[in-house]
Structures are given as C-alpha cells and as structure tokens.
Image (cartoon, rainbow, N blue to C red; front, top):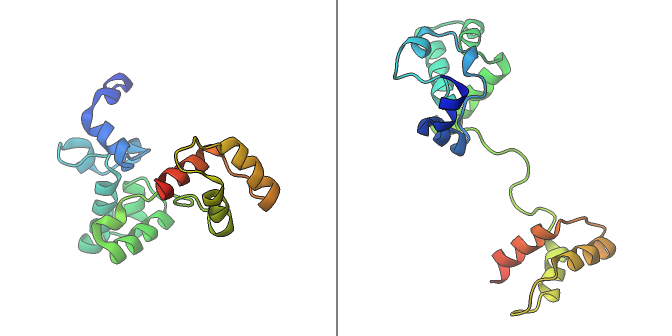
Length: 153
C-alpha cells in the first residue's frame, strides 16, 4: 500500500485511533500475514496473538517466532505474561506514564478547590504560579482547568 492510500484506509485509521497499529508491519515474515487477507500485519494484537499461538500450539521455538513476527524476545515474554494475565485484552497496548493529573492531589487539590469560585472564570495561569510558589509544584494551567472541570462542575 502506498502512504497516500494508508492514510485513507478506514481500518488503519481505526487501528491508529485505538492504539493497536503495528509500528513495523514490514518486519513480519510469516507468509500468513503476507499472502492472505485475514491476517493483517498492521494489527499488533493479531500479530502478537498469532506469535503466541505459534509457540504454544505449534511448538515453534521462541527465537524463530520472534524473528518471524519482527519482535524481540523480551517483547514475546511480555506479551505472553500479559496474555496469561488478561487474555486477548492483555495484548492491547496500554498508554504509558501517569494516568490523570498526578500532581494535583492532596493539599494542592484542596488549594485549587479553595481558590476557585463557582460561577467565576478559572484563573488557571495565576493559580499555577501560586501553586509553584506555595507548594513548589509546576503544573500546567490546562491541567488545572481539567481538574476543576472534572471535580467541581
């Protein structure tokens, strides 16, 4: 597929949106993913599942399977552990890093709640400066706006 067609392919757009687009589909050497229409090298969940199945059911060596599916051995073992823990859902890539406003908790959150007046505009930039001065925590004004919207409204 050409790059122009890739951007218009609804399945690729859906995989990208869901975070399951394989970043390196060209590394897949398994003929099922090259010749057929059912197996899609762009779908990382399908690729990982088939790799695990190949080792588990067909008793293929891990090294051979990782070469066929274009991943490292640590990636294989991580996928295996995730699959054993959560099934197919464990193969869906997770977002890395903190989930949510981890800096706006406890005393900082209480301070934000005290400073925000219901019905008045949020002064997020000013609040961010006050929080930095009072607590030594650097928070982006947009984060403050999101926290206020989520917790107070």
